[in-house]
Image (spheres, rainbow, N blue to C red):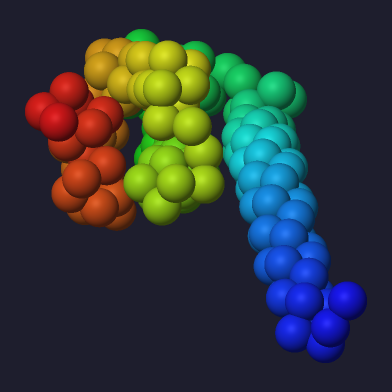
Length: 150
Protein backbone atom coordinates (compact mmCIF):
# COMPACT_ATOMS: atom_id res chain seq x y z
CA UNK A 1 0.00 0.00 0.00
CA UNK A 2 1.38 3.40 -0.90
CA UNK A 3 1.36 6.57 1.17
CA UNK A 4 -1.41 8.19 -0.86
CA UNK A 5 -3.79 5.30 -0.10
CA UNK A 6 -2.90 5.42 3.61
CA UNK A 7 -3.48 9.21 3.60
CA UNK A 8 -6.87 8.78 1.91
CA UNK A 9 -7.92 6.12 4.45
CA UNK A 10 -6.81 8.45 7.25
CA UNK A 11 -8.88 11.31 5.82
CA UNK A 12 -11.93 9.06 5.53
CA UNK A 13 -11.51 7.84 9.11
CA UNK A 14 -11.03 11.43 10.29
CA UNK A 15 -14.20 12.53 8.48
CA UNK A 16 -16.15 9.67 10.05
CA UNK A 17 -14.80 10.60 13.50
CA UNK A 18 -15.86 14.23 13.01
CA UNK A 19 -19.33 13.14 11.88
CA UNK A 20 -19.72 10.82 14.89
CA UNK A 21 -18.57 13.64 17.19
CA UNK A 22 -21.11 16.04 15.68
CA UNK A 23 -23.94 13.53 16.11
CA UNK A 24 -22.87 12.93 19.71
CA UNK A 25 -22.76 16.67 20.42
CA UNK A 26 -26.19 17.18 18.87
CA UNK A 27 -27.62 14.46 21.10
CA UNK A 28 -25.96 15.98 24.17
CA UNK A 29 -27.19 19.49 23.34
CA UNK A 30 -30.75 18.24 22.88
CA UNK A 31 -30.58 16.33 26.16
CA UNK A 32 -29.21 19.37 27.95
CA UNK A 33 -31.89 21.61 26.44
CA UNK A 34 -34.62 19.23 27.62
CA UNK A 35 -33.11 19.15 31.10
CA UNK A 36 -32.89 22.96 31.23
CA UNK A 37 -36.51 23.30 30.15
CA UNK A 38 -37.56 20.86 32.85
CA UNK A 39 -35.55 22.79 35.44
CA UNK A 40 -37.13 26.04 34.23
CA UNK A 41 -40.61 24.56 34.61
CA UNK A 42 -39.74 23.35 38.10
CA UNK A 43 -38.42 26.80 38.96
CA UNK A 44 -41.66 28.35 37.74
CA UNK A 45 -43.70 25.93 39.83
CA UNK A 46 -41.62 26.70 42.90
CA UNK A 47 -41.86 30.43 42.25
CA UNK A 48 -45.63 30.22 41.91
CA UNK A 49 -45.84 28.29 45.17
CA UNK A 50 -43.72 30.91 46.95
CA UNK A 51 -45.89 33.65 45.48
CA UNK A 52 -48.96 32.21 47.16
CA UNK A 53 -47.26 31.29 50.46
CA UNK A 54 -48.58 34.29 52.43
CA UNK A 55 -52.13 33.62 51.26
CA UNK A 56 -52.15 30.23 52.99
CA UNK A 57 -52.06 31.83 56.44
CA UNK A 58 -54.24 34.21 58.37
CA UNK A 59 -54.89 37.07 58.15
CA UNK A 60 -53.82 37.02 54.48
CA UNK A 61 -56.21 34.18 53.61
CA UNK A 62 -59.23 36.16 54.81
CA UNK A 63 -58.01 39.33 53.12
CA UNK A 64 -57.38 37.44 49.87
CA UNK A 65 -60.82 35.81 49.85
CA UNK A 66 -62.65 38.98 50.85
CA UNK A 67 -60.63 41.05 48.37
CA UNK A 68 -61.44 38.66 45.53
CA UNK A 69 -65.14 39.19 46.26
CA UNK A 70 -65.15 42.93 46.93
CA UNK A 71 -61.97 45.00 46.94
CA UNK A 72 -63.80 48.13 48.12
CA UNK A 73 -65.14 46.30 51.18
CA UNK A 74 -61.59 45.94 52.52
CA UNK A 75 -60.24 48.43 55.02
CA UNK A 76 -57.45 50.70 53.75
CA UNK A 77 -54.84 48.54 55.49
CA UNK A 78 -56.30 45.33 54.12
CA UNK A 79 -56.42 46.87 50.64
CA UNK A 80 -52.67 47.43 50.92
CA UNK A 81 -52.15 43.78 51.88
CA UNK A 82 -54.43 42.63 49.04
CA UNK A 83 -52.55 44.90 46.67
CA UNK A 84 -49.21 43.41 47.78
CA UNK A 85 -50.56 39.87 47.29
CA UNK A 86 -51.86 40.71 43.81
CA UNK A 87 -48.59 42.38 42.80
CA UNK A 88 -46.56 39.45 44.14
CA UNK A 89 -48.56 36.89 42.23
CA UNK A 90 -49.03 38.83 39.01
CA UNK A 91 -45.34 39.73 38.86
CA UNK A 92 -44.67 36.04 39.23
CA UNK A 93 -47.09 35.37 36.37
CA UNK A 94 -45.44 38.07 34.27
CA UNK A 95 -42.04 36.40 34.72
CA UNK A 96 -43.54 33.11 33.60
CA UNK A 97 -45.17 34.76 30.61
CA UNK A 98 -41.89 36.26 29.46
CA UNK A 99 -40.09 32.93 30.02
CA UNK A 100 -42.62 31.34 27.63
CA UNK A 101 -42.01 34.05 25.04
CA UNK A 102 -38.26 33.46 25.29
CA UNK A 103 -38.81 29.74 24.70
CA UNK A 104 -37.79 28.60 28.18
CA UNK A 105 -41.21 27.13 28.98
CA UNK A 106 -43.70 25.21 26.89
CA UNK A 107 -46.32 27.69 25.64
CA UNK A 108 -49.19 25.17 25.39
CA UNK A 109 -48.70 23.88 28.92
CA UNK A 110 -48.41 27.43 30.23
CA UNK A 111 -51.65 28.51 28.57
CA UNK A 112 -53.54 25.44 29.77
CA UNK A 113 -52.34 25.65 33.36
CA UNK A 114 -51.78 29.33 34.06
CA UNK A 115 -53.76 31.59 31.76
CA UNK A 116 -57.18 30.51 33.03
CA UNK A 117 -56.08 30.56 36.64
CA UNK A 118 -54.58 34.04 36.60
CA UNK A 119 -57.27 35.38 34.29
CA UNK A 120 -59.76 34.14 36.88
CA UNK A 121 -57.98 36.10 39.58
CA UNK A 122 -58.14 39.39 37.65
CA UNK A 123 -61.70 38.78 36.48
CA UNK A 124 -63.12 38.06 39.94
CA UNK A 125 -65.17 41.00 41.26
CA UNK A 126 -62.43 42.23 43.58
CA UNK A 127 -59.61 41.25 41.25
CA UNK A 128 -61.26 43.22 38.48
CA UNK A 129 -61.54 46.26 40.74
CA UNK A 130 -57.87 45.95 41.65
CA UNK A 131 -56.84 45.33 38.02
CA UNK A 132 -58.39 48.62 36.89
CA UNK A 133 -56.04 50.47 39.24
CA UNK A 134 -53.05 48.13 39.35
CA UNK A 135 -52.74 46.91 35.79
CA UNK A 136 -50.13 49.59 35.03
CA UNK A 137 -47.69 47.47 37.02
CA UNK A 138 -47.78 44.84 34.27
CA UNK A 139 -46.51 45.04 30.73
CA UNK A 140 -49.14 45.71 28.08
CA UNK A 141 -48.73 42.28 26.52
CA UNK A 142 -49.35 40.59 29.88
CA UNK A 143 -52.40 42.78 30.47
CA UNK A 144 -53.78 41.77 27.07
CA UNK A 145 -53.01 38.11 27.73
CA UNK A 146 -54.83 38.16 31.08
CA UNK A 147 -57.90 39.90 29.70
CA UNK A 148 -58.06 37.69 26.61
CA UNK A 149 -57.30 40.54 24.24
CA UNK A 150 -54.35 38.59 22.90
